[in-house]
Length: 301
Image: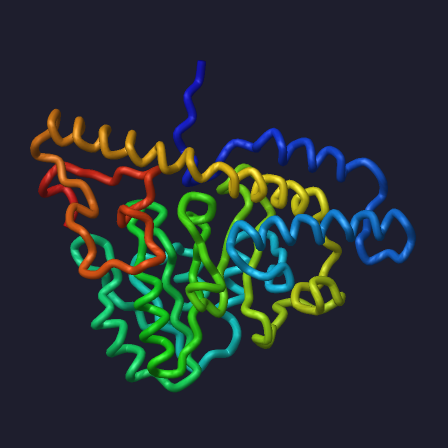
């Protein structure tokens, strides 16, 4: 029997997603067609859009389906902002799409240095873009997005968050936080690889990276990936109802960490201290319940 632990890379396909995808792979389905087959496909896409939006506490019309988190990040970052500010621990999908960005350091616990971020925001031209991930994919550290957004608003900047790793594991209140854009990916929550979304605040101008079609309300051209989208919707629907699983997992996380520290006294776990501040959007812990990041003393900075 095999045991699979690499959910941060990709989660197993959920039964509900598989069933939805197989159903969508039946009849011919181009959602741009005006005939019955096309309109049936359109209905499936809009149902999935509502399910994905519900998982993120966003409006359905704010969901732009993409090929994954990487494309969503690129769409958010390649908007022509006069300056991009990000952190040194972002996913490569953010760092490689913003090579000229100002990169703000994190503290010893892996939390973005908000004082340094404030200074960078103060020095940036108005209308710049701050991009800070919701939770780190290696350490599980949850970043203080409420503080990040407050800093951005103080200096008239936009805010994007790569929330790929946080989706389905903690509450992601897109509307309540006041984010402008947020990237998510389906295969992290049990959908297929190759489908994601950029959540973009209603009224914010879009800058498509391609031309050739009016799909996604002219925001992302190309015939929609129907099977991927409906699978994403099904996985999102199940994930919305599965939050108690992650709350229970937090108890196992803490017990495993305690056992680890007892068996290996020279181990260091990140983050080992609570963050400097706590924001109301956070869970009871400052890290994802699905990750324990540790090393022996002296092996990492």
